[in-house]
Image: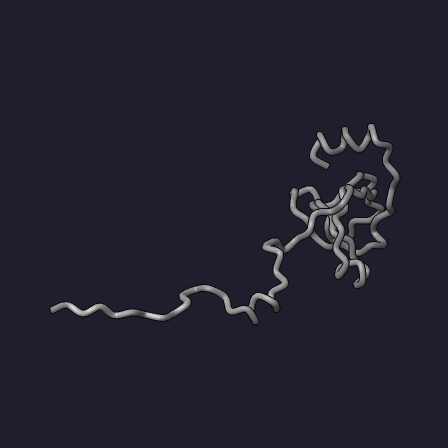
Length: 105
């Protein structure tokens, strides 16, 4: 004769207390509300990554900004933190913003 065993377990289901403490949004970076642009004034030791007098897109990074850094998408296409003093923020007209976005800046 074969018996039937009933198992009581929750498997991978999170407990209610664990669900309340989790603050993960599933993404490590939050997208910027609108693109910001800066012009490079200095590129000490980063001549391959930054060109002076070139416009770059800046991403918001609150932690970096508190440390005096700005997150820039550089020549490699990746975003890195650089000293804020190396850049000046620029106002870009809407028509120019569209052109910069199409160009991948």
